Length: 616
Ligand code: ADP
Ligand code: MG
Image 1 (spheres, rainbow, N blue to C red):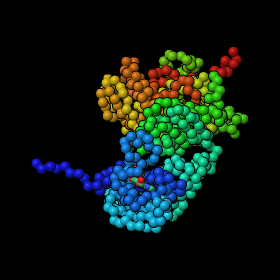
Image 2 (image 1 turned 60 degrees about the vertical axis):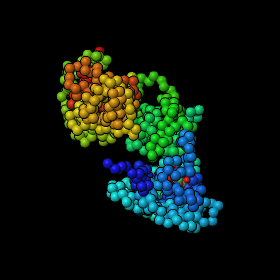
Image 3 (image 1 turned 30 degrees about the horizontal axis):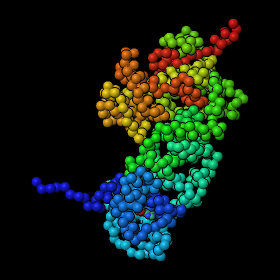
Image 4 (image 1 turned 135 degrees about the horizontal axis):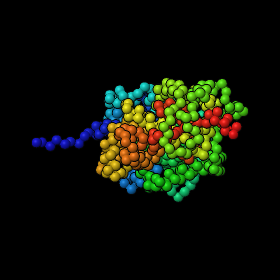
């Protein structure tokens, strides 16, 4: 048989490499902006036509290139930024792989004009599909101008898969924002189809954020600063009251490079923990400076993922830096004076402070049954800490409530994270609610008042939600930016393997079973803020316990275990909206009166009972 292996021609190799480096116009924008930054530019213009599908042009006033360098810059692995392997660990530039221009030139028509400051003339190169078509001297200002036309002209599959202009443009802006935030000292203009989108001057960081996201940001930012031997952190966090329901502006930069890091994100989210509602996201702009030899940037072609040698310490430092800032700017009095507050009274909306008692809005209250149905014998009261299983039937009339909330909840997962939005404002704004001993939620009903055990109630909600997911297509899964590998005993790995299908329905995406490890790609949305390793371990523990504890089927055990791993614990301070949300969702359950293992979730004090007590 003849030899059959051949080396691929450069143009093909480049096109293959391009697949990794340039997925869409925004990736080319990122690479070219970074080249301009690396060239030391202080002014950069970005000109886009048709969301980058027709033209991406970047003009910089950086160092420019000589004739030979200009030609060489399009070769694969051609870079001026590193020379030997050691330097891979001392990287201070954005680029170093020498792939971007070669990749872009393989899949587009490229025109480069560049001039060294000391030369009178520059050079112009036309290149398409990796082939240099022309190089000639030209008159051009010092610096570099590069135009990318007809991106993916020779890769129809990629071109056809490009999204609408609006979406591609959003990606471009996102890349631009990352570079512009990383380099506030550089001025930028951005034009799309002749409209000016940005024109921002070199400025201090705060001004840069305000220039990019609007003047309202000025009052929202709180400075963060912390210097340690391992890492220096500076930047801003958004005040908790401006936290958003959608993940908004959340930026980490390491040595002026934008990075994504789920683990470090968690450090910030944790620091905000009780200051913002579940389901809201704080904004932050945090800049870390570390010794380049303690990070590895070269783990992915796009270089937005990096590995830290001191990840744990950096986590702790970021966490404490953010907490300090929240405390220092008196945003978090509860952090400064963490007294044992027995009554955690959630603040009422201002205009209602005077008369928070029952008003006509209360008539909606699903608990509203005129007190007739809360029969004492079916509805035990006063046994709050009792561990005795509760078997009383739920008062008639709660079905009405069930009807009301059920229809509303049908369109949404039972316990979605944006709970506060699931009911119209008027229904909840007047309802008095407070937390007692960080354990019980107290609120009124027409016939008196109730205490809800926060942990048991949440367990009930999560349990029914999980059961519903197991019976249907499955729940919502939060895909992880960085799949996490977790080491487990081989027995646990096997258990997970056996439960794989049901776990998927619950929102876990787990794969790559080794004998001793699993890879977690996604977790149930409700578990978003919980560290994955602990979550999985706790969940398995609960499951194994449930096997011995109760006679039930696998799905029931899974649902119980998940509910127990995820539920809000006693001792956790809750915000007003969370409490209202919890109560409404509890009453949307088919069996709200008990926790999954039969303990009471609610106790009631009827008006009659109170009358009797006061008469005594
Ligand atoms: P890398 O940035 O990883 O070195 P690129 O393919 O992006 O690889 O660029 C190759 C080389 O071309 C760079 O190392 C640099 O020397 C040169 N170069 C690219 N863009 C510019 C620019 N705007 N100004 C000056 N030199 C540039
Ligand atoms: Mg580059």
